[in-house]
Length: 53
Image 1 (cartoon, helix red, strand yellow):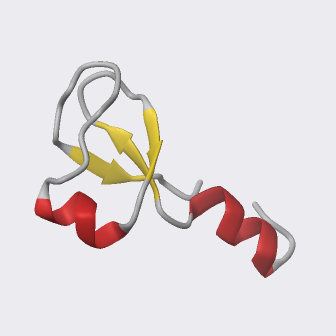
Image 2: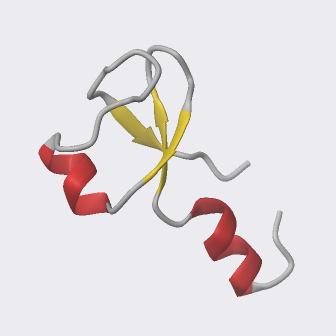
Image 3: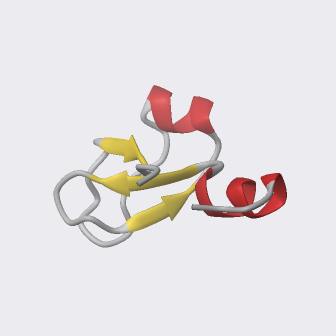
């Protein structure tokens, strides 16, 4: 995908996707793992990291 490290970090670092509505959310990994961050659209707390195709 990305040709250099900076672009890869902008695209994938701290980006998570809601499992129910597929909305992208940016936040720190520790807060997402502890359940402190929720989806703005559906208020779900189940998030996954963005996949690198």
